[in-house]
Image (cartoon, each protein chain N blue to C red):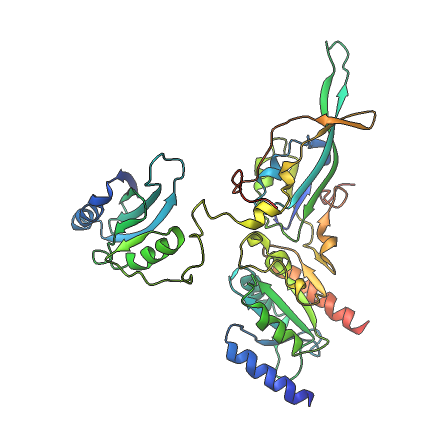
Length: 105
Length: 165
Length: 152
C-alpha cells in the first residue's frame, strides 16, 4: 500500500471533526451544517450533519496518517495518487472532488 | 530475549546515590537522560528528570525518575555519556545540572523560555485560526440558527487567557 | 561581467558553508543544470538521494555554468534565508523548486519561531512539490515537467 496521498470517502464522513482537531499540522478544514430529518415511526426528528466542504492543505500535510487512524467511520484512507506538484500553493488546497480515492468515479 | 523494565522514583537528593548504585550493580549502559514537563502537579517541583540505564546485554533496564524544580546534581562523572544529555535537558527544560558541564548545545543565552516547557507558548498557534474550533451550525431552510455545541474549543498548546490580539 | 559576478557570488556562498550545493544535470537533457540546496534535516535529502541513485540526474561537469533549476529542500530557517536568497539571485532567471512541505510552508514545523513559513515569501517559486517527504518519483516527475516548460 503506497502512502502517497490521503483520500476522503465522502459518503462515510459524518462531520465529527475528529480528524480536524487531531491533525498536528492544522491542515484539514471542514465545514458542515446540521439538518433535522424526520423518520417514520420515530417520536422526534433526528439531527444529521451534512458535509459542506472538506479540504486538505497539502502544502502543510506531513502524511502522518493520524487523521486516518482517528476517523471512527473510516472516511479517510491512504491512496496511491501520484504526489502533487503545482505552480502555486493555492492548487495544493484540495477539496472533496480532488480528494476522491483513485479508481472511484 | 526477555527484556525487563523497572521504573523507580527517587528523591532529588538521592539521584546520584541511586545511579551510582545501579552502575555498580551492572547497569553500565547509559541510554538517555531527559525531562518531562509535568505541569499538573501541585508543587513547585513540576519538572521530571528521567534516566535509563541498562545492563550491557539489555536484558535488564532501570528507568529512574525524579521531580525537580530547576536544579539537579550532575551524573556526568559517573556516566560520561550523560554530559551531552544533561546539556540538552538543561537548555530544553531550563534545569541546571550542578557540578556538570553547563555550556549550551544549540541555544543562545537569553532566548526566552526553554522550548520544551509547556509554559513556552508558540505564538503562531495562538494567532492562527484553528480549523478545529468550528462547530456545525443548525440551519432551518437555509438560515443559520445557532451552533450545535457551545463548547469553546482551544487548540492544543494554547493556554486560556494568553495574550490575544 | 556576468561571469565575474557569478564567481564572486559563488565564493560568498561557499564561505557561508551552510549550503551543500552539488551541481547536477538532467540525464534526459544535460542542458538543464540542477543545483540542490539541502537545508537542515535529512528527510527530504534522503528522498533526493534516492532519486539521484535512480539515475535521473548526472553529475554535471560544466564548471561555472548557471543552473536552470535550484531545488530548495528541507526546513529553511530564517537564519538561512539570506544564504538561500543570495544563491538564487546569483543565477538570474533560474527556476526555483520548493521541494517538500517544509520549504513550501514550514511543514510540520509551521509553528516553530525560527522556521520560515515558505521560501516563496522571499523568492519566486516555479514549482511546489507536496510531500513530507515527497517520493523520489515525485521529484523526477516534477523536474522533468519543469525542464519541459523551459523549452515552451
